[in-house]
Image (tube, rainbow, N blue to C red; front, side, top):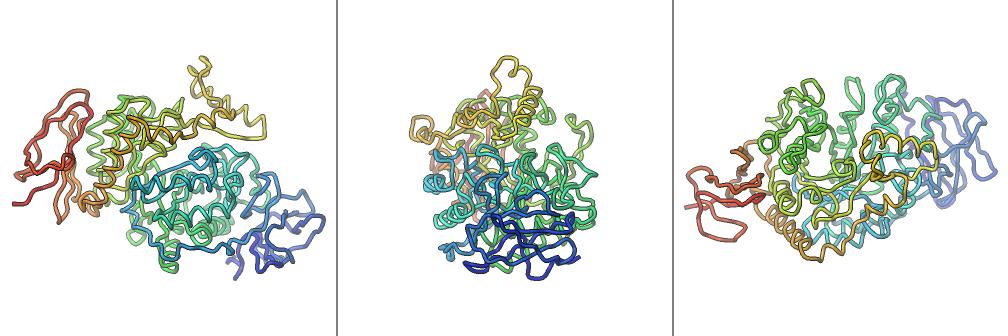
Length: 595
């Protein structure tokens, strides 16, 4: 069945005294809207859709009763003021008076992205509190902030991937109006906002979707629980639910892009997958709105179709996270080879990631015990997001250790240079720019003690040595959450300030030099390795740039490429060089000198 014309899922005020309610509930024969002690029967629109108009306005709390059973919250609720177990609230997302009409976001390739977790990013743990730090990010040179998931989750402490109301903005962060204000103020400072959304699973507590209809597919499971139904019976309606969710963020909240969590865990055998359909509809929405609606995929599949255009048979994503870049960099800096790091050889693989995108391109993966990936050398570097840290790579470590805690200052400085001078779209994880020492461990705030205990046991099985020693963070404890809060006072002290200035200088160079600013074609960026030294040449009509990185603990010397002459950019010197000597964990940067 086609979607009912003119309807929007959830509660949409038509005036201060009238609201339209629309619900997809094919499991029910009779649906009633509960307003306090009053019950209003919804009209059956066919195809499992029900709707009614009630004489209530914003601020009204409501639930639905299905077939005279237990009352439950709206699966398309925009606000859960009392959390996942409470009623939904009518909110008027059209009432906010936006001031960003003049804002024009940069193209995705021109961004430096800063990933943050709202709850631990600032002392208040809210959107409003986070606004106080945006000026510092602008000064640093960041152009986009990426918010970890803000869809309503249980309690007040969570990474966000346990969200169960996809449309509702976390109440403890400031709710929907708080998010609107955050985006508006960010735009006023020239910052784009990217939102992390989870379309592959829902959290275990407070999840009501299965009550209403076949939102989940019995044929598949993810590592987090039942898979969402994107390809079985009545999946068209599930797709519509998630399309309207994506559209909400762009239209009602003015976000500039969505980061789609773990798209390789979205099992979809359709001829046109949900992800491809989402890309097409977002492209159409972008044309209508006159501004980008970017889509960034998180995937470890190493499938070049992810960022291949729809017209060429791909999924049409604008970019994807490049885990291979991170993994090879991490191995080069730490020498860790456990888990998925066993597939990477450090400097040589990092050079390949710079040069070709993926490291594993159909070669054997010892971690997976099978071949993995496909060739990516034809893909634009601008289709890859590169990073030395992110929430997963820090937070899924046993102690939530940040890179600087593992390597010390010199390798951390080098990692910053590698990320910010490499082709692709650089992403920073909150606090790395000044060497934040606080860990970022996994934390939750479930009200179900059996679930809490299950999570504790799972973490103990994953990290038995730490559990036995009593040094494993308790994910349920408020102390674990508090330990992850950033300490921005470090930004003004000694080595921390020096590191912050280092990041600022690198970002300024990236913004100012055309060769560093973008690489639309693969041949615009070429990298190779000699021992532990990587040479990266980035080409542009206005002049080439060469970066040389020593990923080793010993001094190194290498020749600069070609017959050209090169001037040192970091020392702002016109003295020409043909070779470079580097101390351990050091780098140098040169521009071509024309005769």
